[in-house]
Image (cartoon, rainbow, N blue to C red; front, side):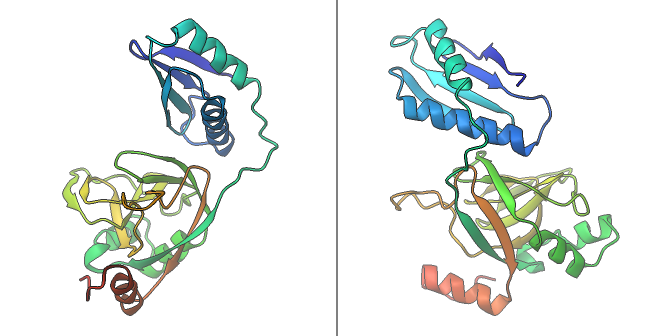
Amino acid sequence: MNVTFNIAGDQSILVTFSRQHIRNETSKSVRKLAELVEQKKVVGMEEVILGYSSLLVHYNPMKITYESMLQILKELLQQIDLSKREQTNQVEIPVLYGGALGPDLADVAHYHNLSEEEVIRIHTTPSYTVNFLGFTPGFPFLSGLSSKIATPRLANPRARIHAGSVGIANNQTGIYPVISPGGWRLIGHTPITLYDPQRNNPFLLSPGDRVTFKAITKEEHDQLIRQQQGGGSYI
């Protein structure tokens, strides 16, 4: 395993597993190391932040030295066992594709010379992996998108995107958990709440979880909205 350790400021170490952007084995290694670091409960270790192929470890230099933190990371790296099955969840996300909350569906279809129905079929076929959460609270970066619908980001990002918007950016797909700006191609919307700070676990999804998408009708979408929010039609 070709792993490098780099100083990232005066209280962080960046552990890089691979220069290749998205590989399931690499992402699993990142998750395994993060799990081992958190289980170790190192005095002075403050936070771990996952990426597709890297792990950023924040520590308090007043409680642990760089050399000690680095040595612990190297020791934990040797304990990674990819043969062990991850404790993950399988989550189905209902999506209303197209329309006012999926304004880029037609563009994605046109970009690949497909019909909108074909894009929806392709998007709902795979089981995706949550590689990490980032950008905004609970935003899942999902790998497993078919190259048949991989589409570049927008040249000009939107200033405001609805929470629940489902998007595509190159060979990734993801869901905006909160209102935010963003440049992903929006192909639909889910009424499911991905991030709720009032829940015991604010995040619906966790790294390693498997996600599938299910196409629903506007009536089903609005019914789920009413069940969660007690409101009426969303659009």
